[in-house]
Image (cartoon, rainbow, N blue to C red; front, side, top):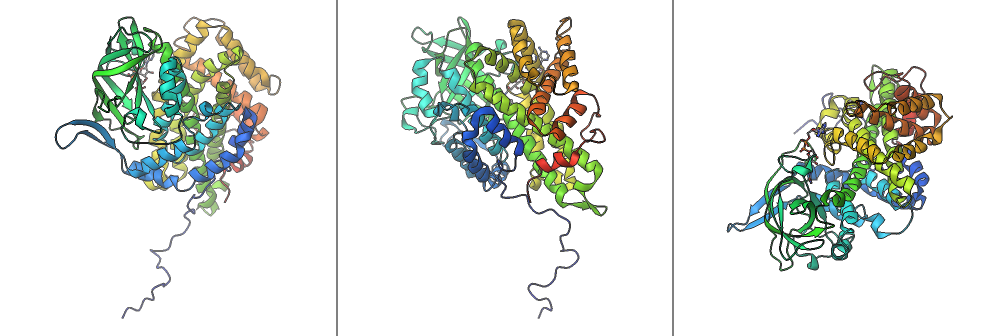
Amino acid sequence: MSTLAPHSTPSHAQRVLNQPPPLEGRNLFDDNLPLIEALGREGAGWAHERAREVGAFWGGEPMGWGFQANDNPPGLRTHDRYGNRIDEVDFHPAWHWLMRRGVADELHALPWRTHRAGAHAARAALYMCAIQAEAGFACPITMTFAAVPALQTQPDLAAEWVPLLTSTEYDSRLHRASDKPGALCGMAMTERQGGSDVRANTTAARPVNGGGPGGEYEIDGHKWFCSAPMCDLFLVLAQAEEGLSCFALPRVLEDGSRNGFHLQRLKDKLGNRSNASSEVEFHAAWGRMVGEPGRGVPTIIEMVNHTRLDCVVGTAGGMRAAVANATWHAAHREAFGRRLADQPLMRNVLADLALESEAATVLAMRLARAYDESDDESSLHFKRLATAVAKYWVCKRAPNHAFEALECLGGNGYVEASGMPRLYREAPLSSIWEGSGNVMCLDVLRALARSPVGLESYLAEVELAAGADQRLDRFVAALRAEFEDLAGIEARARRVVERMALALQASLLVRHAPAAVSDTFCASRLDGDSGQEYGTLPAGADLEAIIARHTPPV
Ligand SMILES: Cc1cc2nc3c(=O)[nH]c(=O)nc-3n(C[C@H](O)[C@H](O)[C@H](O)COP(=O)(O)OP(=O)(O)OC[C@H]3O[C@@H](n4cnc5c(N)ncnc54)[C@H](O)[C@@H]3O)c2cc1C
């Protein structure tokens, strides 16, 4: 007979000491003070209760779905057992749970389903919560959301597809559109020989019966990156006789047969592993032209801009997840006889990460409001510049932010179960797709060259904080000087865009954040009183107040 009782005291080896309690059952909205404040400020106070519900839901079970969907990545089935092409991707059920709930929560469609002012800001808040459970599924959600304004340039196509793309029913089956209660849309622009420079596209479109806007075309060629290939519809760029044009290609034709849209293989990606990204070939694929012939880029650009908005919002969500985990761990872990959160040097790191996260959140939410206010000309100019500036800067800041947050958890942060490796792998993606870093900076220069008044609209927003902080005033004066002599501006573009981003983030924080946050941001980001790494905030900063604002409640 064993001498050990069933519930005997654990041995030394079995005892678990000084490990933080699991960070579970969070309300991802309620514990994010900068987001709560921004929601009301940016015109969507009406969505507060809804955001609380969404925050509670996505902070619960979906956190587990995110792990499952990544542990069981999608698999490609090009052919059935008899050799017929089927071009399907199999996903773990957790992927479908994420998608179904994301669609039900209108993450893909809220502003297109309501005329309420502030709908973009409201959606951004919901999206920022949900993406903390898992980022991969946000790709088809975003593309479906972003496709709607591009499709609207072709009213007959919009009438057919927009009701499906804005439906709250998720239907993962590859069926013809008329049999489906809801549909999803992707985009395919990038080819092997060029992604940023889509003018190099070689995919060719041949009119079937006359062509022109809304006309039928047959498309041959390939795309090197085509994410979420189980979407029902794709907006595709291809060369027509008149030049690069935009086309809508369904996966399934109205007679129920599969379109000539062949999945070659799935990419083996650094992160974003729950989501499938494919290489495709088009073999006499049937499509309809969207917008004017030869105007493919201006037509699809509305889709691109809305995806860029989501790159910013999603990255702010990722930063929030990183900070929540880091501050939580430090609040519960002791080293050298004191909680990590009480150690001065760790405080500096945590506060710096929190500042970055707050600055990303306020910028993302302000940008979302610009999408709500697209009917006023000055707001349009602001939106045009702020989208590119924020996409460049917020996304560029993410990878090192994720890494530093991961390191706050020590070795635990390097282990998959913490969720931190997933955040880290995901972090560079938003900077690469939908316009990589340099391309975004060049886009800012292009916008400035096309419309010099754009800069004044941008600076007018920044200068709403004029006089409130001398460091910001000096910084803005120096920023203006950057534009006085445009010689060599292309080589300086990153420097200029970085400063535009910092000025706007500082302006928003000076106007709206507690003094501890805005003061420390201005000192470290504008006044040079910091080092190259996170954790180099100046002495005297109110680190405790900053951290307290960002630590999930016990
Ligand atoms: C996971 C993933 C999913 C994707 N999904 C899709 C999708 O669904 N649909 C789709 O169409 N695409 C998709 N892409 C492709 C993505 O949008 C492109 O990879 C991106 O636009 C960059 O294009 P590229 O890879 O051809 O790089 P390139 O255009 O060759 O750029 C390489 C580098 O050069 C820089 N560069 C380019 N031009 C200049 C210049 N003039 N001056 C200075 N620097 C410059 C870029 O910033 C970049 O750093 C996806 C990519 C990834 C990683």
